[in-house]
Image 1: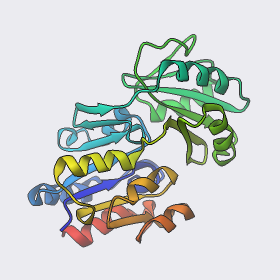
Image 2: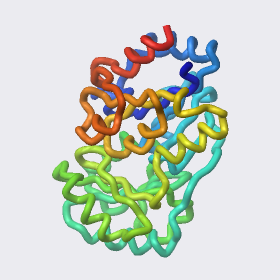
Image 3: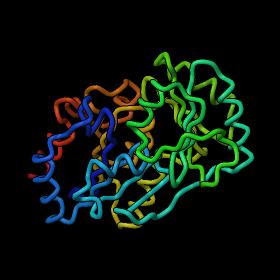
Image 4: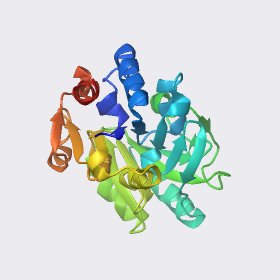
Length: 262
């Protein structure tokens, strides 16, 4: 029996226009509550952004935000990881010296940008609902969870190894979209957050269903017997998953959930 359902957001649960069928999901969510099934949103995006899609259900959902670096039950933080200050300052200086990229420093309380083009800042604001424009990114008074690097030419795969070289072996740089590279502490990812939740909630991988589409979903797919790559997923994700779901634009997550829950 499924006891834990975990889904990525962009390219997975959300359609390309960042919507989902709320009426259809409401019926499934009520069914999950009746059956005692936990629902988890696991995203590389900011907690304050992803919770905005579930305002009427926020207190009943687990959020593994910032690629598993920030775990929240409803509005109550459970844990977070923080990057050491000396690593943060060096990485900020090095990344900002690169051409063709914009840096977002992702903190527990807010995200931060500096010297970003207006058009790029407008794009960033869609994904970071708490965003502050600073004169400098050094010396921020916040716990820094990760960095997000926006590439102007939609070539995140090209920039990922360059950024990996910059941040060193204690960090991991992973392309999370065509124009996004996320950088976080090594060993922290969506999979570690789901493993923590499984232990805390008493749920096994055999009782877990996971959906994903991109490279930052691979670790959590390995934590579930019922692991689904979206039809629109990249090839590495399809190889890591046990099953394929219809595409995000065909409401694939909801379709598979209905097969098991209704």
